Amino acid sequence: MIRVCAIVACLLVIAAGFMTQTQLRADFAKDPATLGWALVDEFCFRGKAKAATAKIWFEPIDGKTLQIADVKVTTIKRRKVAEWADRVCATIPPVTYTPPADRWKHIPRTMEKLRKGGKVTIVLLGDSIACDTGNSPVDVLIERLYPKAEVRLITSVRSSTGCSYYKDDNRVKEYVVDHNPDLLIIAGISHGHNPEPMRSVIRQVREQIDPEVMIMTGAVSPLDWFNNHYVVRSKLPKEKALENVNTFAARAAVVAREEDAEFFHIRRAWDEYIQSCGVDPDFFHRDFIHANARGRQVLARIIESYFAPAYESGTTVEVTRYLTSCEAPTLR
Image 1 (cartoon, rainbow, N blue to C red):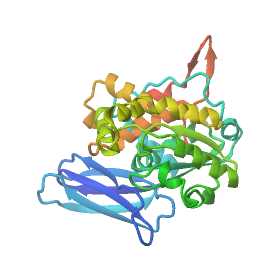
Image 2 (image 1 turned 180 degrees about the horizontal axis):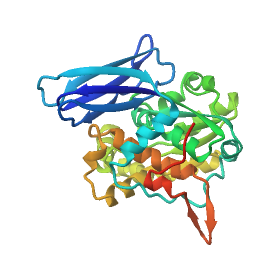
Image 3 (image 1 turned 120 degrees about the vertical axis):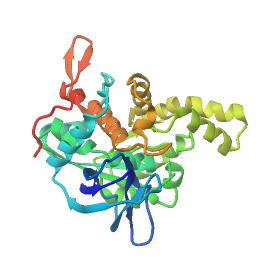
């Protein structure tokens, strides 16, 4: 990952955008930061798939003059990313999530690699929501759980893009196959409440390589707004559009089961946290739809819990304490 360290003197937005030679491939990683005079702020982000350049800029939120004393952009060791992530995590209510006891049924090879050690390549395919998830420290958190493993996370995304786009014209080759992942995670909120294109993407990928697959529902954007937005834009009769909205997760789970893919309902976990944490949802957003650094911590800690080693105690699954306390062993 890459670290931006700035000494600034106002309320600002720190933003990073990754581009190929010809186009912007995903939404910016952008975070409002309320900073006093001469305070140092850090912001870590990673390059997206096939990014050629990065642009960093500062924008005063309130329109006032922005004063910057120093800016440093450096690469950062994974151990330092984890330390930075824990400092951010310490500013939010503890993230508690109990994953399903029967998880991992469809990703046994991935879990075996994590336990025994070796390189595990994960491709996140989707939109700007998937981009936010990939721009979280989830890979270094998983490595702390499995110290012998090396997790390589690739965010292969396009803004406002779902599987209805990726399924056409053999786009899966560029966005998935060329990266040869051990695990493909189909994520985001831009699938038009239709899981069938996911099925098409899974089958096309498996015709060329043999990764394990996870379908992960989309989180962060307020559910009522997101659903109403779909009802308006779909141009379907309202009753049909609402039916698509209300049954999408269940239909995606069916596609996952029929295609021997893992299904992870992270939307439900996100909503449960936001509703119970006692903090205004805006605290976790950089805009109305996307997560800021704190929101990305929530996503990362939920996913970390999903992959955490399970210790059976009766019929419950307990995960290691430091997942919710932000305490952790040393990472290389």
